Length: 163
Image 1 (cartoon, rainbow, N blue to C red):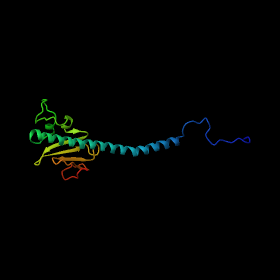
Image 2 (cartoon, rainbow, N blue to C red; image 1 turned 90 degrees about the horizontal axis):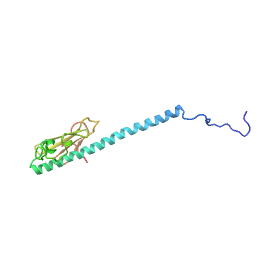
Image 3 (cartoon, rainbow, N blue to C red; image 1 turned 180 degrees about the vertical axis):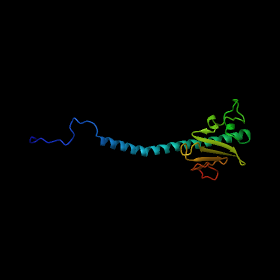
Image 4 (cartoon, one colour; image 1 turned 90 degrees about the vertical axis):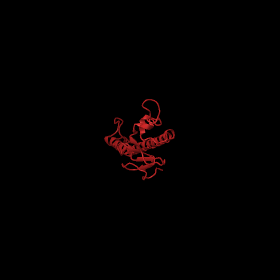
């Protein structure tokens, strides 16, 4: 019997510590929901950062082409001609104008190509694995206007300008 003036507590007794199974499941569900929102945003941020680096690398190749043309009177035909020389002495076969990592043609998950055209040269940067390494392809020529394509097809001079 309950004495007068005493009340029955509506909370758990002091011997029950911890969380119930329902409380734990609710916490796990909230964490999963937060992860489902955060992971795609983190992936997009990483791709944006990678694509920004790739745009700078394309511009580095363009600067190398400008210097190469100034030194040797013509544009380089390959990335290797802009890169470090094999024998250590800079010249038309290896002008040491871009880093060796870029002259190899693969960097930051992208494949870089350089080829001569009737007007001068064209630089392309395409993801090795579209959607995984990047969502855009890039193109730049002697005009200095960077073009992009939001798709797996290589960007061209007719692709939209990057703004």
